Amino acid sequence: MHQILAIDTSSEVCSVALINHSKEIIEKMISIPKSHDQYILRMIDNLLKEANISIKHIDFIAFSQGPGNFISLRIGISVAQGIALGINVPLIGVSTLEMLAQGVYRRTGRTRVLTAIDAHMKELYWSVYSLINDVWVSPLDETILTPNSVLSLIQKGEMRSIINDNDVDNDVGMENWAYAGSGWKMYPILEYAINKFSLIDGKTVFPSARDIFPIALKKLEKGFIPLSVEEVQPIYLRHNIAKINE
Image (cartoon, rainbow, N blue to C red):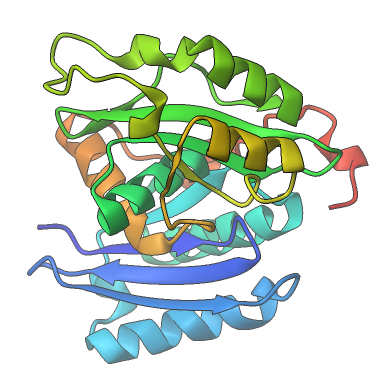
């Protein structure tokens, strides 16, 4: 079993987690909007001390690759790159939206998740996931949508194409879908969608570093080649992100 350090700074919540050779997970989390840079290194140091593990014994650094808040996301990625460079280990990037889906599964056992993160400018980072054979899959690319567009997708049921013959649950009604992410409670029209389609509260508003592990380990199992420091690129989705003051 690999020892992996996970880092997430994609939202107002900053979290770090460690999984050891015995599959034990330790996590530290704090809500610190716009202050991630002041706490992240101290949190990692405290995490390693609690686990009684030297940073030199880490096999991989895994991190939230985005989408998310531009400045916060860059802090976490820079820290991951710095540590990886210092101890000469590769990196594994994980989608923030996929982390939300994993958080829903961990907390509620639900395997169909609609994810929406507030992207500002009255838009949402959006995707749809279903857990099939222990892998999160989606018929839709991660994208940016307006709340009205999200409602339209739900009404048309376009995400239902994710259901396939391997899904043992043949009831594909929207009442079997959970929702997750900070975007859902930001706009009245999405509150309307929750009630109208009986969507399930996935009890996951912000991503958590511990939810990186199942995704990262599955990537390695499937033959994913970890990234070098130079290969790491954030997932912003919005091309003109540098012009936006988040």
